[in-house]
Amino acid sequence: MTPRPRNYVTYYRVSTQQQGRSGLGLEAQQSAVRSYMEARGGHELATFTEVESGKRDDRPQLTAALKRCRQTRSTLLVAKLDRLGRNAAFLLSLRDAGVRFVAADMPDMNETVVGILAVIAQHERQAIGDRTKAALSAARVRGTKLGNPRLQPGNAASAAVARSANVKLADARATELAEVIADARAAGKQSLRDLAAHFNELSIMTLRGSAWTPTGIARVLRRLDA
Image (cartoon, rainbow, N blue to C red):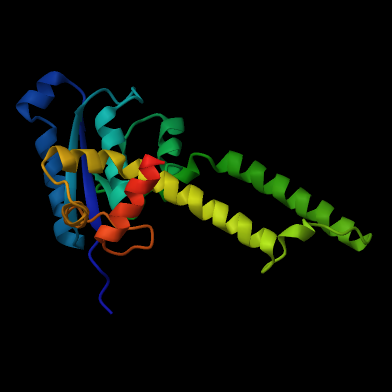
């Protein structure tokens, strides 16, 4: 089976206003991104450009790009990894934002590379986990009962926890989509059918990965009203 082409949101950053006006640096980034998508396939759903120093972490266009990635389950594509930033902690925060990203200059070293920057912390967390497992194992040998008996699979308490988690996930998704709905309404799309079509045109999927219907839009609106 041929894999589906990946959807991308592209992000470009230049460091000075002069570069932004002249296209210096920007054209090279755009060329690298085009070459990447031509070689590997994929669709560009949206693009964002920022004129900002890589030392700064507060970048509204990058924030908007990440939001669009989450909305459309797309991959953030940049020409070079340093276009995202040179601060290790900032890059780690991007990795933990739940958005896949890839750099055209290092196509085989995507967000996984960022994890290397935190290898020492990861090693320490692993050591703590190993010690915890050893302590739990020793407790079992002594006959100590572990775990919460109320949360056994299939019982009412487990079902309640699962429902609560699903509600929180759906509420968070509705909040994330509120801005898209507001933009669509500002553009004259008022009916549930029009809003569903707008979401599908943007390749924004439901939590289950399916296309939007008027009924699905109505559920989101009820959550937002609540």
